[in-house]
Amino acid sequence: MAGAEELAALPSLGPESARMLVEAGVEDVEALMRLGPEAAYHRLRFAFGRRATTNFLYALDNAVTGTRWRDMSRARKAELREAAKRIQAAVDAMGR
Image 1: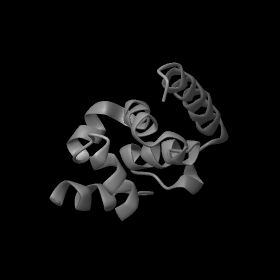
Image 2: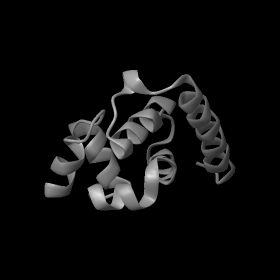
Image 3: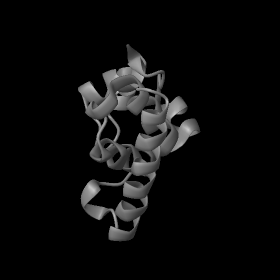
Image 4: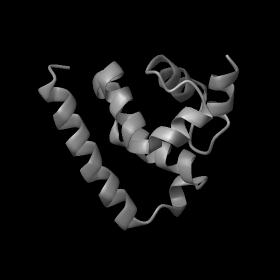
């Protein structure tokens, strides 16, 4: 499970987050970087429903940008909250 170990080593992610990502089809760091935080969160929300919270989207953004959550600007958090709402509504509309 080398992909999960690599994912878990990214900022703001850990073993459980990495396991969930792999299960949702984001199998390694390269896939996460290619998809970006919003598309990866969409996969998580589809696979895990409400277990994939907005905080998970923040963590994905930190993992992709290599930053810590404390360094995230208020503006970026607001953008991600709006993205999470859109993604949640889209997944809900799919009957998930």
